[in-house]
Amino acid sequence: MTCSVHVELRFKSMADRDTDVVDISELSAQTGLAPSALRFYERRGLIAPIGRAGGKRIYRAGTVQQVARIDLLKISGFTLPEIAELIEPDGHVSPDWRERARTKQAHLRRRLDEIERALTMLQHTIDCPHTTLQDCPIHRAVVDTHAETLRTSRAT
Image (cartoon, rainbow, N blue to C red; front, top):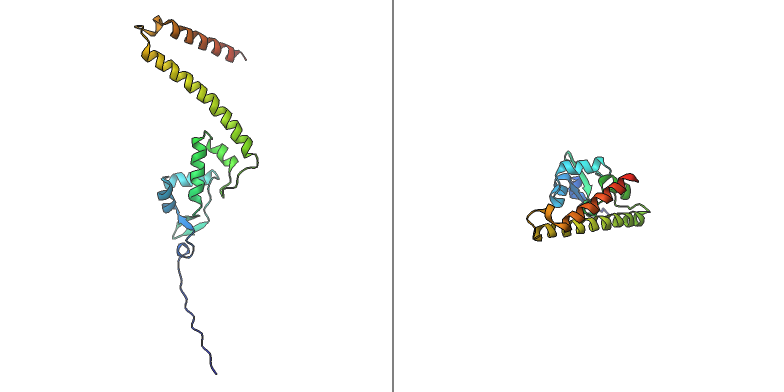
């Protein structure tokens, strides 16, 4: 009695074997970042390739979310060095991420207060009935107050 087994071999490239990877061109297309920017992120330790296929860097498909995470942190005011300290290339987050987020939130609130004051001042300059700002007592008072703030903050 003879038994036969039919074996079919299919050789595929690494990218075909693992659909959970993207090459640098695909990652660029999916994130809108130039390949040079992705390589910069790589040098900064923000993303990491898992190898090469056809001479191109390849990344886990989840790297698209990592780039999105980096972008959201940038929008939130974090610098790239701060982001590199906060998240690892695989997406793991620093244990003190909540404290870092609270610190950044406080910084953004202070910045928002500054922006709101600036918008108020600009609106007044637009609506001011005086011919020149130097003639406006409100503008002069704002400038004087700010000058005092500068003197005080420089002295400390």
